[in-house]
Image 1 (cartoon, rainbow, N blue to C red):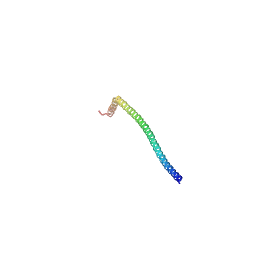
Image 2 (image 1 turned 180 degrees about the horizontal axis):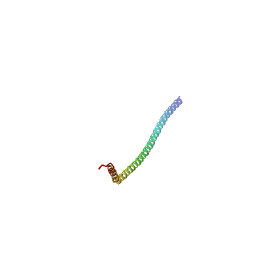
Image 3 (image 1 turned 90 degrees about the horizontal axis):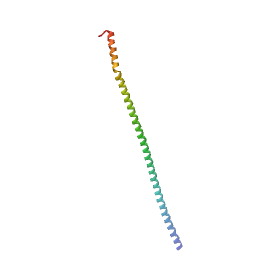
Length: 113
């Protein structure tokens, strides 16, 4: 009978040891899983940050290009307006004189003084 008791004690101790090792393995597996999740999240956040920075750089570049183009269009528009004003001022006296002459000629032709 002492042999059976000893065998039973060994088996119970082995069962307890197996349960303890199983719990340790489960805890270690959970820690590995959580660590992997944290690393994945960290990598994901880093990638998202890089994509956001790249998108912001593209937006900034597009805004700069747009501002440059707008300034150029405004400058060209102002140049054209200035040229039109210059042509108007250069020819305004001639136009007014021509209109006055035509009006005077018309009065003369009609006989009105």
